[in-house]
Amino acid sequence: MAILDFFKRRGAGRRRAAPERDTSAYPLFNQVGLGPINQKRAAFKPTPRNLRAFSRTPYARRAINALKNPIKLLDWEIRPVKGIDVNPELQRQIDLLTGCLRNPNNDDSFHSLIEQVIEDICCGAGAIEQRLGGDPIRPLWMWPVDGLSIQLFPAWTGDPNEARYQQTIGYNAAYTAGKSILLRSDELIYLKPNPSTASPFGLGPLEVAFQSISRILGVGEFAGNVASNARPSIAIDIGDSASAETLAAFRNYWRHEVEGQGQMPIFGSQSSGEKGRGYSVLKLFPDGDNALFLKWQEFLKSEIAIAFDLSPQNLGVERDVNRNTAEVGEDRDWVSAIKPMAHMIAAYLTRETVQGLMGFSQLEFAWLGLDREDEMQAANVYATLYASNAITPNEHRALNGMAPSLSPFADMLLIEANAQVAQEAANQAAQQAERANSRALGN
Image (cartoon, rainbow, N blue to C red; front, side):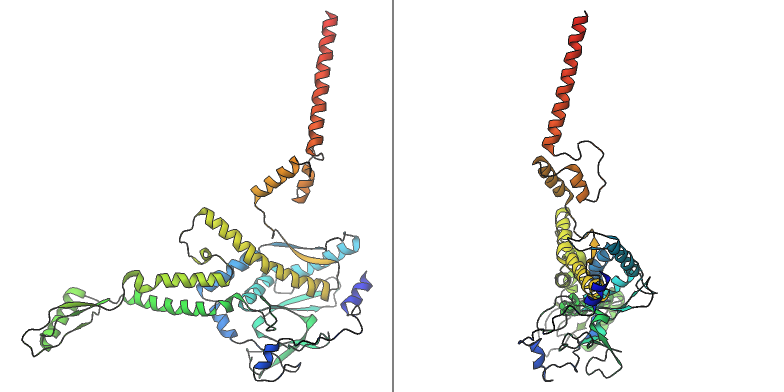
């Protein structure tokens, strides 16, 4: 088993004459004015600094945490793939890999490692460097890497000895002007959300919400200035018959005797006509909640939540929210946002680390408790199956990770249990009748 895994890891299982593809990988990259893609030119992802800055704003941070916190709290395990039974060698591999993942390096636990990776995935790409060490007790080492500093070679041929990634220092994205580090495919796990055939990069939810976050920052700053300065929303026109002295006297009176602290616009003009205009009040802009654009901010928060596949209630939009809608929204968030990201991470760790770098082809990484069930619905399903004589109580307990019951009926179908109960009742009735006959004969 170990020899087979060794040759699989070294690529010995690949066909000698692998066919070449006729289509072009990422054809849109040929239209950016830099000529056709080639292995010597790395592709970069723009605006990493803006994405990092936006990830620190309140609503983006709340959306990221709504994805990150449930996943990082999940338990996990290394287990055999479906159809493979555990044997002593597989158990040794499981224990070895579990110990390595629990302490991937000298600074991180698996909890802190995966938390940083999910943060970067939301910004567009997550990355983990992985290496094999010389210690047989701890052969695997892993470190989180800034995914936005990673550039890709779109024309990578699949050669394991050929560089597939390149890290640039200081976000020198345009032409890799600074220091760069070349990395092979087996040295880096590059996790990209929402992959497509148009680009070698993924599309993170923060990139989707880029414009919405920019707008909410702008309107939030404006609303803060309006609320903090408390500017009046009206102006007073004292008419065209007021002289400059009258206007100055009125303004002085209003500021000191009426307004006190504010700066209300007051203006007027003097007319040569006999009859001038009277006093009037001019509306400058909306006041109250309308002046703060609260409905527009609420709409932008809903846009940000949609970009992260979350319910608006996660970002504080709680209009028309009750217990039923909140529970439905929570379940929808788990299915549409949290589970897909968790499955993506598990698939990358299985392919790149467990089966790729380590060569443990019969094992996989899996989250525990990810497939949540409606307990009432599960109970109804079990009741239906048990009533249909399709499952025993102990089989149901085993599916739910519970210890078997010691009841004599726990390994019986319902029809068998009913027959057993009926037989025992008949036996008891026969015994009672026999005792009654004995007493009658004795008398």
